Length: 120
Length: 141
Image (cartoon, rainbow over all chains, first blue to last red; front, top):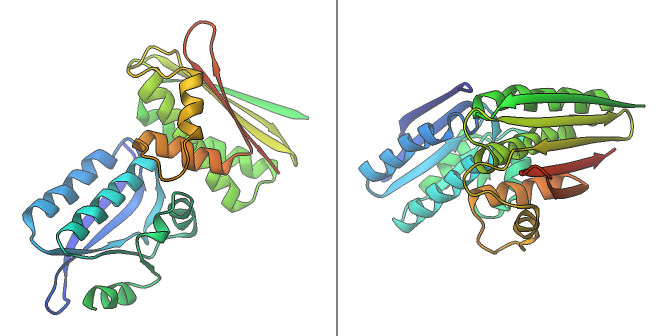
């Protein structure tokens, strides 16, 4: 299995139920389904959730992981929450751009900017 | 002068990391930029994943051939044995790639239709005589 670390922590944003999801490593066919389960579990357990997905440490993501990202975004939006991404490396932005996801999900260079976007 | 590298590996996803890393190294050696070599990394991953998921039973072999001409081009040829679930012949694959943006695509379809077809200059699907699909992706410098 390709190395990946997924962490979930609570974000301190006034009036919001917000979490920070960090992926460090690579998301590919060997690990993406298992890691995605953690996020789906979170979506089930938390109400009115907003998410910042921190991709600073992610060096590769395949098409399936992009599909999951899209699905989480849809689910979060449907429950009135907000999902943004931050820190994506050049090659990650490249693939998100080619599938059109950068037109849908907001990306911020810094975690601070991402948190501010959630606070709005 | 063209250099050819042939790999056969068991049809499981654990094998693909090494194959895509090799693809990236070969791309850099051919003279592709850092960005292009990372795109070739992704293209190789998507092609191999498709061969494993749709074209091969567990532990059958997938064959990948890299053809590199320094300063000119790189070709990735990915062949499966066509015995997996949801075997997709060449004509069907061509239709998947030909779908316009906005049409609903499976996650696998998204990988091939958007990522691979956008990042290579030529993409060809061929039916192997003995069964299976052969995908030829070419990128020019």
